[in-house]
Length: 255
Image (cartoon, rainbow, N blue to C red):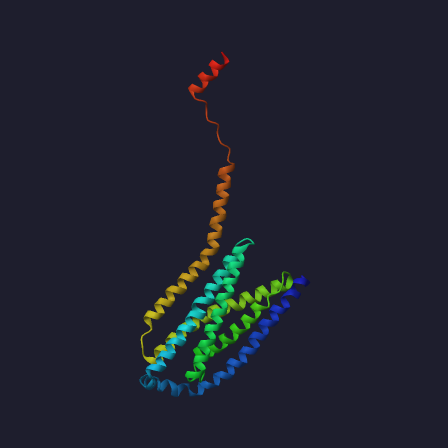
């Protein structure tokens, strides 16, 4: 019991620092809500004032974060789950490195999207999308550092795995949620319809979620198939009675 509690100390410490550091950061940024009322009144005016170049920047920013947090990160999670169900070998290494590549690409795309936001947009952090986006970018940076410092097998590995898994799941879920808030913000900013993009993103996430749930069921189906196959192979087979011709041949041989 003491070994388990000792192994969980790094996990609890990292989570504690994660929430303690991010909560004041987000709360400090929430002071921008003072100008939220005036911003809400000027939404329609800003929509007309936006240039085509600015609309393009917003669209590219949204696509980058869609590819990062809405596609690469969830697919990376599915990939590492496939590796966990495989035996040690080249396939496991391939899936592990594929998972790492997906997550590195996701961090790079998120970084490009964040730089675009800082350089081209008015970041007053007066809405949930901007505040959550900043918190998510800090979180994926921490997650990337955690991923690079994977310890060897043992108690530390268990604590590392729990931390990496929990933080990664939170980032993926909140990243998907923030994409929906981004689509809503894009509609308010540009007065353009986002119904098609929302529907496509929902279909994609639904497919990923179904595949995620099907992974465990498929393993169960495979195990059941193997059990049934073994039972059929080990079941006693009734000997077939000899035919009349075989009986006659036996009699003639004896005679």
